[in-house]
Length: 151
Image 1 (cartoon, rainbow, N blue to C red):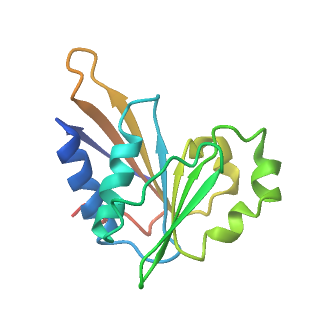
Image 2 (image 1 turned 180 degrees about the vertical axis):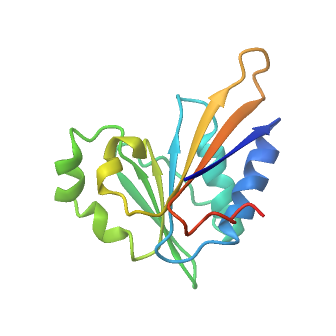
């Protein structure tokens, strides 16, 4: 595992980082987003989707568990697993079957860590205590596949 620490000073920077990462991902890639409510997970997802021309499609998957976004090249699955009872519920909905069908963005993915493959990107968002616009990001590159993703 490799960890990269970044600071985002506004929503635009968070979205730009997401677009940069999106430009390097393909079917089968997984991003886990962690952090308290309002810490930047949705803004990151908006930026990510915008790379694929899907920025106007985003809606929270809180009650549906997963939303699917498609363009003519790729499918992106946006999960919010916060309300799942346990890992068994993730398997019951066939959550792991999505992993090889598109790119998966999983909010609160730390709750299903044991279901994740050996290679994925985890981004932990933290609000800055002195500036409401600033976010501190710990980007954990799990496994070997993504070690150079931010170069």
